[in-house]
Image: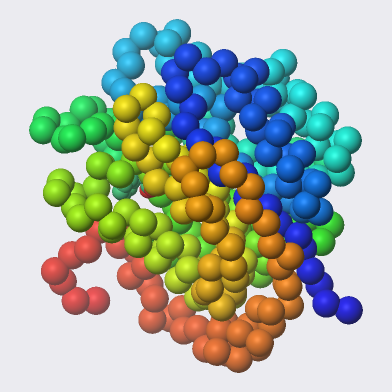
Length: 307
Ligand code: ING
């Protein structure tokens, strides 16, 4: 009997500053109903998917900043999404800004049939803590979020081992390898990727290439499925990439979103597809040589000195 898992990715179109959480939860609920109607068991939503991507601005008023954060999860406005998931019998990944006491994290949770079974706090915080002179756009996540303190956990869901990461994490091979070494079956990731942030004058096609390149390489090199959900489209005048997709352990994109708006994609994933890779070419136990990898843990930045 093949181990299959029906995954959906719910891409969100833009969320503008004046969109309320209730309006956003109504959109998320519509996507969840669509995914469940297709037979999906799990749904991946984007990063920071309850509000507009506020780290594009330098906000100084703590009350204005905290208005983008959730003090409780579920809260009054998000409870309906949990209730719907319980009714539909589905699980979901949700990205949001978490206020834990006075600590601010870029967080995602795994919720199975309305119960939180896992939490992750973003570890690779990109961008800057202060606005940068001459940048076409700002990306100030280091101003608003602490580095996550939960590691890269992998959770035993009923049908599969599921791990999470958030946006910039997907560009770092260490992210998936730590989960791969925990035999993760599915990595869920949400992202907000503005087009203009990268290298100034970067050719327009490269943000799309780099997104899929990172996801496909990581799925293949860690013999896992990757479900990636974009918040896409033009938010407050800033364009963000779409390209939501479900990637197989072969590194192939099984299905991808075609729009930059609210859109569900889904795929019935064969979780045993990875076995051929795990038993041979990527049999970590047989082939990895950590005794030669110490630089990966000992050094933070690259240095022009040999080990
Ligand atoms: N966003 C971006 C990402 O890693 C970024 C930051 C944009 C990095 C463009 C490089 C180029 O996709 C988040 N939220 O991490």
